[in-house]
Image (cartoon, rainbow, N blue to C red; front, side):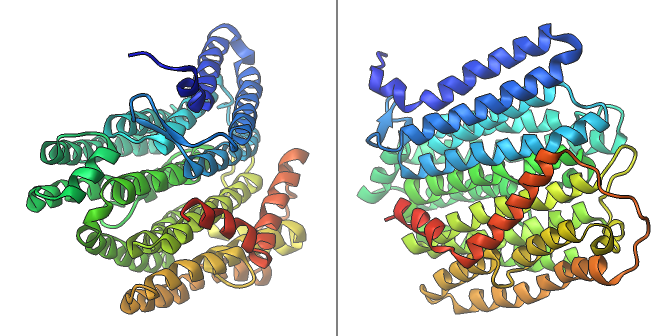
Length: 478
């Protein structure tokens, strides 16, 4: 098949990142003891340069390429840009943590760039096979990253659990795709949408395939009842890896659900809406209730993630452009806030000490008033307390389900927001009202302190002025 130059230009960010990922692999192989430093800077250059390429292509006309299997549109542009910028901060936050534990090796950065490439492919996929290719590239890199700390039994156990359940979920997703292919005769999302719209297809077969697709999506998001891997992986993986898993891949998973359910199977909305309602309600309830019992901060944030997935699904299940925009706003805000939350754990950690228990933050306001305030901003945003941006994000998705008369679902969401506020406010109480256990002063690189502070202040700024980001999300689905 012949590719025109314009077709190749649509995928220029991915092509550039793939070339740089191969260069980083060569650097790892030939740079010896300096592989970590060289790979780190090459990775940061790759992410920044890719973001610049994506930004410069914003004015380029949208369209399909590679025989309709790859799409460039407003959704892909915004989400790819967000993924690259989030991962720049992820690598920045992670460097000091990896150095202190002897994990500052080139393999981490090579896997991170290949995983990012998988995310970009997922975001622009318009074909079942392309989507599956991106998903597996991302997943295989994440499995290896979780097991990066070879001497840790907990990390190895988490990686095995993640790998086995991930393989099962990928099989479910692939089985669902094969059933839909059998019913529609196509793997391209636009052709599938046309075939369903035309009619004459067996709805029972399509619904059966849809169930398996939802199972695969639910696992990748960590939605209940497919959440069993998430707390163990978040807790067992090195915090630098947990930070990576908890942020940008959620943006790619959001793109996957939009491509599959909205653009490909939008005509079956009345069939998949009920399934998503069940996932959303269970995720909000179980995520928030179980998080209350956690004493480990990483596990608490894992169950918090499960509850946030429930809120994110509210906008998607509404079936309206306003709901899709609200969910997109939510996933971007969630990634930014979670980035700061796990960044704080890395900031508080040091060689021989993992600051992953809630009690480790006792009296933080006395030891470091500034970073206690930054953590307060992040916890308030996750709890959805105004004027933080998390409040506006929850309000937007709740309004989207009210607009389609799903008032009972909205009531559950509001009640679970109140329940969830408890364990976030407990962190505030520990930092400001409990006596400090130790007097160790926080020591972290200056660049990390500056960027982490900026991260938290952006969360506050977006809460006061949410209109600009919401306008971008609304324009994507206009």
